[in-house]
Length: 615
Image 1 (cartoon, rainbow, N blue to C red):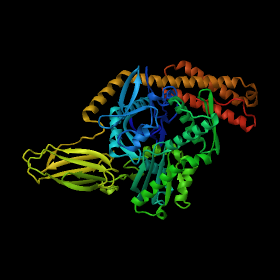
Image 2: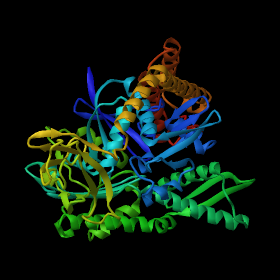
Image 3: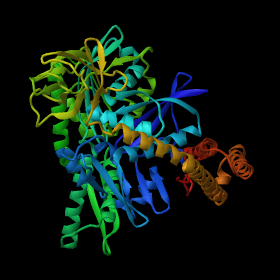
């Protein structure tokens, strides 16, 4: 039996959700049972690594590990934000002949260049291989940042097509978060008529304002920034640590890419720790020569470093209110999702902005988007309609720039008349932008659409009807044309990936899956087996080596853990070729028993000298 899944593509990690028995289940990825897989792809001389293994490889070869792909996917090297992000990563980003970002890595001593769509497709292929171990996939819903342009959405779809995925829908992150909120707070669905949903992740911020009417929530404004998020706070903390380190050792330092990557990882962990703690210590051994970095950071210091990010978030919310023609007093609820939503400063920023109104954090904020996207069904109990993050406008040589589609669900299609300027004109070129009409410098050039060839005998002044439609399922722009009722070909000369190249990439990916697809699954299965075996052996050694604790618990409790260990060891011997799911299930069951034993010892004020093994 096949089923639909949701793939939540984040800047820093991926999650996969599936609906089973009317409940959302997050699937285990990466072979270690974790439901969040780092969005990392590493190129080595012996092959490719993904997820946690790729992230770990970045400590030794950061120039060959690609991450933060959403910052570059579907972008342009002419974009100042994209160029700024190039300086924040250790791998090399170069411009293609049409100014698209590409990544350049070294494999077996030879340079190799890849489009971002190719690298993202590799990550999606790997993810699908992990999912295929657990269920048969039919269709996929993908989540994207709220501010993604149609070009960026098209690039996501291209990556999915290369990976062999059939995409049912692209869902804005704030829309998915809103669905999660409505599903988990059904009693408030009729009270909260107007909701501001904020998504704050590692790589992007998004804001959507929705109005509920007859159990349908319609977005009246959507905005965001796909180049602003927790990453920027991490980078500020990195600079803070380097400055403190230089003061300690009394000289300037120039960190290697490897050292800088180690420091980035430590700062990311510190930022997360300061969501609950008031102070933490960042330690990186031998960061420069024999010198260790040791920096104590307080939450107040982190807040000072993050203040400008909060200012920009406030500006996004104010802009969304302006787009919706709404006052703060009209808002019934503020909903917050995304990993950065755990940061106390972000929560208080929104509370202050809305004059003390409560901010509702959705369960586990990191899982809110994938949960909402999994619950979303066009014909289900929870329905939310998306809106355009920016309006569209068109320019031609023969007419002034004018709006086509505005940021509302009411304007998702339109048909316009364009006229030939000469006899026997071969085609019409339409420049379609996303942004404020006429402001080319600040607008995103979505496409250079060629309408034609036109009929050979077409006279000057003839009408060409061109239809523009935002496809509801994907949020991408479709352009079609007719002359006297006859269809005319249209093509976007600025498409992220040309049709010919797409065919080649899809064929190459299909060949690659046939050749090494099994290797990907086998590697993940081996990792799951190793993790479960190591966990079992370490727990057995710790438990049998603690005679004091064994004598303190009841005979039934002692027998329960002894039996669980014996069963797990026997199962591992008898099942050398089990699936990833089966290996993880055995480890989870053993962990549950071990946790009960330790909790019982704590209740007796007799904590053991050991802890459950980490994995």
